[in-house]
Image (cartoon, one colour):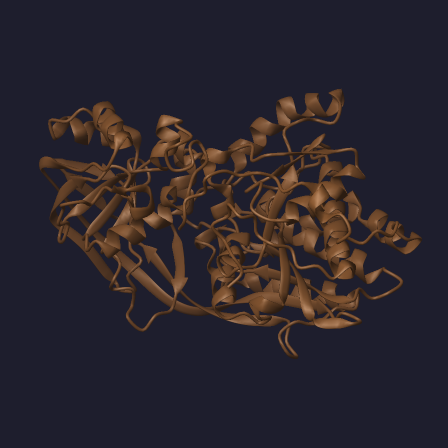
Length: 541
């Protein structure tokens, strides 16, 4: 990944003469205004109902979700997007670690979910560490373009690496280090396990800290326990570390003390440059017993064929899946995933219906893609990117919708990855119609641009936009609502309480869906191909 030296919004003036200069027609206005909160809420209530069981891949909830999407898109006149099928099969394997495990380090047994979460990406019934030496490798980054290598001079074969979350730019807040406060892909947990595997480590343990991770321990224990999905592979993922997982900050502090190290001091050194240090005589042992189940999940794809350029597609995306049902829990067992991402899935239907209501079919095709297994590491979108139904060269742009705004209207539109592509200018033009302004990523340290499905499309050169209502409430009433509602929403991320609520105000979600419709409409009639900015790490292939 190339270093991003700076993110600069491409001026709207750069589009002068290249965007459609016509005023919206009555037909456009009617479609734009047809997007409404009640219909969105009705779809969310169905998708996030207990009947759908949390919409886990390869479950009865998946079957119900795909049937619902097929029914809705057929009703509004969309065609199957994959030949004569609405589905694209995604071969998956479920690896579920038995909760009956302990992590033994330094004479102490650490408990599953309370102190640690361990598992394996290897498709095997047994993975284990046995007296594996611990080595602290700072941020676990090997990035030549940043002159950074935490594995420099180190042989970790047979050892377990202990790794900090996020990257040094966040830790130092130095804008000249990596990308400063904005997380790079090197800060993502996915990268850290991948690099540890490339280095030949036997195990990889990430230290959870709430601020740099951008989520609490409850997200770790809920998201990384239970069935974990991956792709079916001939090599059974044996090139991955045997065991990968997380420990709490408290456990890490205890381990560093046992190793004769100071945790805060080691973190400070790790942020200054390439860094690693042996953790004394400490070794890790854990046995992970896995239940392996192969299955086939599905991406859903529907198309409104273009009237003049049907081979050119504007691609909308959202993930339909969530975390499913945890039968080990007492009481409520269903992760309904109402905000994340029944809202985005419902929005696909709403925006599609707006296109279907236009008097004239758009010149370019409008395609809607609901992907599976986002919660398992963007698997559905990664599979699509590797096996695109529509060639990347024919895909004009991607507009992604994930966890829509349910807390009222915003004065601003927050753009994750602001400055990445010319799509920002299309968004700016659409936002002006709503008297709204564009703001940057409200949580740059969270690396959101690398955490949702648009990332897979960006990786194959398709300009991709991910935006939603920002932090500035539109009025005093919305500000008061957010004082109470936002705390609840934050608590419910990847938790059992992410359910539809009558407390929601979906007027902001309607505004955002109208923006996304407007952008797609402009792209469908102006004939332009949005470009990446010169500072973006993504380019057309």
